[in-house]
Amino acid sequence: MTGFKKPDLNMFNENVFKLIGEDWMLVTSGNVNSFNTMTASWGGMGILWNKPVSYIFIRPTRHTYGFIEKNDTYTLSFFSEKYRKALTLCGTKSGRDIDKAKEAGITPEETENGTVYFKEARLVFECRKLYFHDIDPSHFLDGSIQKMYDNDYHRMYVGEITGIRKK
Image (cartoon, rainbow, N blue to C red; front, side, top):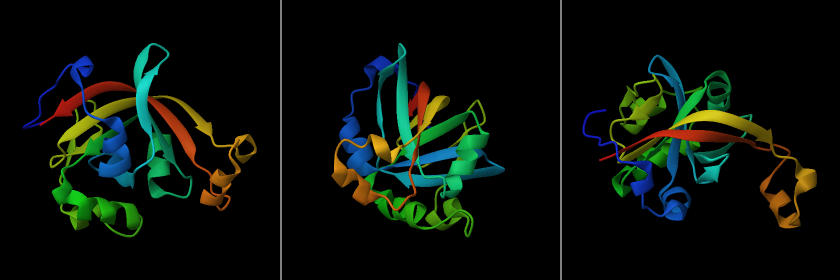
């Protein structure tokens, strides 16, 4: 992972609300020969089961869903603002139709465990799936949430953060 340092996770001090909600992230799973990535602005990080974790949400209709289902690991890649167009493309085009990385001008590389991240990212979290759960609309306590869906509910994945890379 050229140009990246491996800081101690306990030294991570960025605002996760800004990272995910405003800066966005690329959720990626697979290896350099077969992977997909998608832009996400929903998710979080914290401690669960005495482990540092991320949680992400992917709809079954997304191409990335099949890659997350098939693989045990995924990465979350964060970029500087100059990559906003690349992130927009990765969130609006399907990997079924185009080579997103090529079209977005970002370079896929592999972590030591073979999971894809992007050379241009400024921050990467490596994650190992621990749990999944399908969103059940009957559990919405706030009725306004239902308006975000058209019977296409996300699957939530909880992944242990196994590594962090920062430029």
